[in-house]
Length: 358
Length: 257
Image (cartoon, rainbow over all chains, first blue to last red; front, side):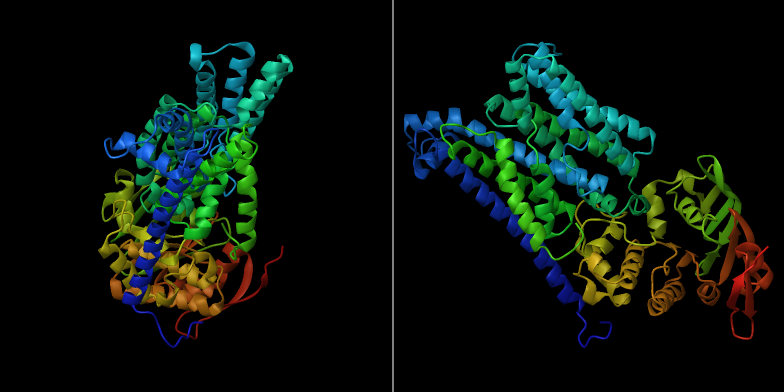
């Protein structure tokens, strides 16, 4: 192997490298186009069937008025009923995909997901507490949501605080996360044990995760969280590469490893908590999207981060499309459908891939 | 003098690992650190790069105390070469070496960064591997990638933690020759923790022999690698042949009793 006839020149390698980057950018555009397409199809399907053309013209009409003339029915159907749900899927899927990628890189663990720090069990407990006992920190419409949000953060910040005292190593974080997950799950179980049957059912369904509770204000809140968190995470994506290569390597290249890990964890946690409190724990996307991304474009987090987000979006809105239509008018919980669609795809990719590392 | 270590001490969970270590490093020299497993060679290297913070003592880099320097300032002067690749996720060789530019760049790597990385890869004869994934190349090539990254860092001093421990003899020699060439041609200095006494003898300008967290002997290879020192530090009876240019050690067996 050492004695090759032709050694690549710098120019040749440079061209290859730029092509490699070009392919990644191409993939981003391809995913964006797919998302627009699936959103359009999804928005056109429902109890009142609309054509794709009606759908897009109704969407574009609000953005660029005076060019299109959609019907009144299409406008109401799409803007009041379907688009909030689809938009929620877009932002939630993106956030979960990005968060999963950040967690896996920070914890150097291919099994990490947005919920590794116990967000799901914290949120589940908070929601159960509100549904079963009516006790909550914020009252009114936001009782369940507020509780889910606050307990999700509480659970994660306890884990961050504890592991911070122990040097913030990935191992401490993961183990503390598991302990807290069991603790909150046990508390939820006790609550449910004493709960009324109907309320327990509601609490259980809350945790499955779906997009039924979508509305424009909620989409706006998640979008706001994304707008705050995503640029920061992108800005730190190179440091994520370094930390994924090892704490010592990262430190020797100028990264303050402990501080960066804690801050990025906190930011990611905030983002995920914002999503989870509105959607429940939609699982799997945050675990799978980063892996699918790495299988396709390699491990450079400057690209894995956005692409993983777009994969998350595509997966979630496709799953939602299926969840709404397959047994219509019954709407299946999208959290479960995501797994039905994602698991076979993931298994296929795992079996197909040649390499033995993640 | 490039680097001066003054009486540093370090403990893991209050068990002392390094005690009273003092040493100096001149420009363009290779300093070999040898000693049995667990004597604190790696700890010493990590303290010098401030990956670990010594509890006492000071480390001066070009007469600046490193405890007063920022991580970035240190990263522009000291390049750390770990024992092996620790990542679990895919990364291309070229991206791995580009990481070495981190102390200089912002989010995006510039054209100059890429050019410099390619230059380094060419220097180490790694061009054909540039687009490969680091997990797919041999241990010897991986070690070269890690050295390339430290060179991309434009560090004055390279710190290598047992660079040859996972390599076959050809790659061991290749890596050591590369280091020798770098030290000679670029005026860079290197501190290397090494297990192989003969490699250390052959390539180090000066050596430190450590025992239980302390420096047991220091000086040129001929003065450090003596029958008596090897017996005291390693508990090994050895023959030391001094009829070649550098001392050559033939281990005979563990000292019993």
